[in-house]
Length: 238
Image (tube, rainbow, N blue to C red; front, side):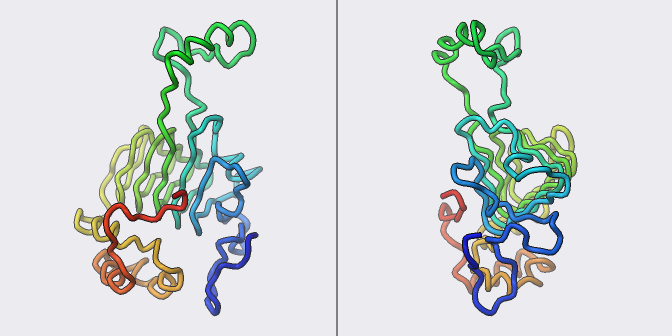
C-alpha cells in the first residue's frame, strides 16, 4: 500500500489496495507489482485471481525474459485464466529448424552465440493493452500486440494481431466480430478519454458511462476540459 489516494468524502475503492472488495478474487494489478517489474498497469485495472497460485506477474505473464514490457491502461478487466505471452517465448524459426538449441548451455549455445548476435534480434516490441479493455476468460495475448482502448477480447481467444479501439474480437486466431459503436461514436469516446477524468468526475457520471451513449460522454467531456488535442493521451507508462 502506498497511501490512500482517494478524494476526501468519496466512498470508492482505493487504487493502492490490492483487494478492493470482500471478494479475494478481485485484485487490482498495479499495487501488486514490485520494483523492476516488466509490467506497468494503470489505476483500477483488475484481474480475477480465483485460479492463481501466485502474483499477477508470476502467473499471468509468461516468458518475460527480455526488454519488452506489458503495458496496461486504466480500468481494464482481466478474467481468470488470461495469459500474456512475452517475446522470450519466441524461437528462431527462419531456418530449417525451430528447436531452441541456443537455450542449452555448452557447445550448442557457443555455436550459435556469434551468428545470432551478428544477425541481430528481431523484437516485436512491448505488448500494449489500452484503457477500459475487457479480456475474457482463458484468452491468450501474444507478444508485441496492441489492444486499443475500449476493446473486448472474447473468452479463449488467441490475440496475435493488433485490435482496433472499441472493437470486439474472438476466436483462434482472434478475428473482428464487430465494432461496439459507429466510427463517429468511437472517435467521440477516444477524444473524451473518460479514464483520464478526475476520479470524482468519473464517479459522478457513472450512469452515463455505464448506460449512456458516446454523445452523452462527449457532452460531459466538454465540461471537464476534453476533448484534448491528438497525441496528448495519458498513459501510466509515460
